[in-house]
Image 1 (cartoon, rainbow, N blue to C red):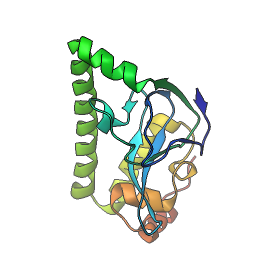
Image 2 (cartoon, helix red, strand yellow):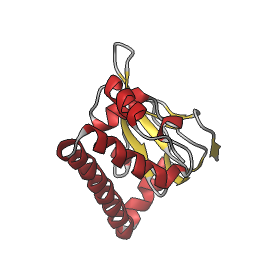
Image 3 (cartoon, rainbow, N blue to C red):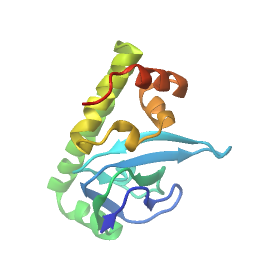
Length: 168
C-alpha cells in the first residue's frame, strides 16, 4: 500500500495489523488529554511497527503519520503471532530489530546530553538528510516537532535555523 505525505496509517488507541515499512518515513505522535501532541518516534525503512506489539498484541501507542510518501506492507496480526509460535528464528529477528531501535534511541539520548543546541540540530539534519535527500528537515517536520526530538524549545530551533547559512 502507498501512503502519501500527511496521511495517517493508524491512530492511537486503535488495534489492528502490524506494518512493515518498505520505504519512506513515518512519525509517531502521542495525543495527550489536553489535545496537545508530542512527537515520540521516527520510523525508517525496514522497520516493522508498532514495536510494542511485535511479540504480543496491544493497542497502538501513538498515531503514525507519513512524513514523505511511503510504501507500507500490512501484516495480519493473527498470522504474525501464529508464525512466532512456530518459528523461533522469527523471534530472534524481532529481538535484533528491537535491539537496533534501542541503539538508535540511545544515540538520540547521547545527542541530547552531549552537544550544544546548534550541534543537536546539525546532527538531526544530517541523519534526516540520509532519508529525505535534497529536501530540508523543515519540509517534513515542524519547528515544534524538531524541538521535541532534540529537547529544545521551538523558539530556539527557529533561532538556530535562521542562523544557519543558506543551503547551496
